[in-house]
Length: 60
Image (cartoon, rainbow, N blue to C red):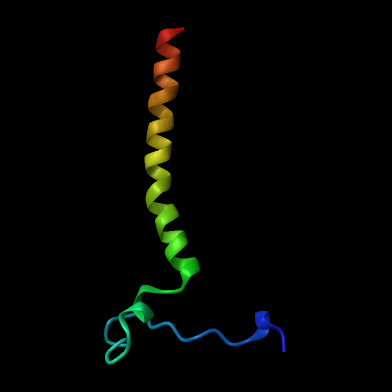
């Protein structure tokens, strides 16, 4: 059986589902953590890019 077809480990979706389990089960999979970090970092990058664009336009 391929690893891609193996069943994923269960991830609880609420604190009640996680009662008695390790805390990392509620945090989510590594892919979900990476996606969450990217969703938080992306607006900061867009904001800084806008500042740089405005600065470049002002100095021209």
